Length: 236
Image (cartoon, rainbow, N blue to C red; front, top):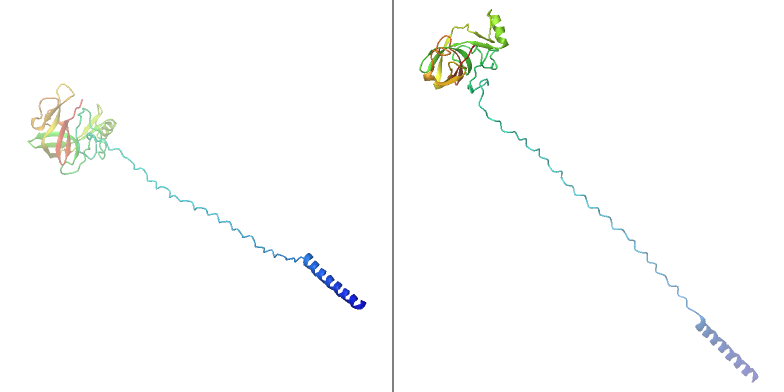
C-alpha cells in the first residue's frame, strides 16, 4: 500500500516536473526571428548630363565697300590751246598761242599738217585772198619765246621781240569757211579786238593789219574741216 502511494507520488511529481518545464519553456523561450534585413541598394543616381547649348554662330556681316563717288567734272569752254578740239578762241589775247602737242615747238598746231586739206586745229598763216565762203591761206610757222631765237639762228635770221615766223613754203591752200563766222579784228589804235562777221571783215582795211594781203597774219580755228573762227595776230 505504501509502495502504490509512493509510485503515485512519483508519477505526480514527474507530471508536475514535466508540466513546469513545458511552461518554462513556453514562458521563457523566445523565438528569435532574424529579420533578413532586405538590403536594397540605394538607387544609383546618375547625374543628368550637362547639356551645353551649342553657341549660336552668327555669320560675319558682309562688308560691302562703299561705292567711290566721283565728283562730276566741271564743264568749261575749251581753251584755245586744248588739243583734240573743239578749237575755239574764247577770250582773244594779243599773245601767240601756246604750242599744242605734236606742233614741234611752233605755236598752235604747228606748221606741218601734210598735203591736202587743212586738218582740224589752230593754224597760223596769211590770208592772201578772200571769197564769199573760202580764203586762200599761206601756212607759216610761228615761234614764240626762247625757241624763236633758236629757230631764227637755224635760218641765219636775226630775231627780235621774242617771235620768229618761218614761211619757206609758198603753197596756198583754199580753206572753206563754215558760214558767216566770227573774225576777231585788231582795233586800230589799240591792242583790243573787234568782233566782226566774216562777211564784213575787215571793218578797217587800212587798219593795223591790211587784210587780205601777204601780211595779213591770222590764226585759223578749224573744226570739222572748215574755219569756225579767225583771230588776227598782233606783232610789235
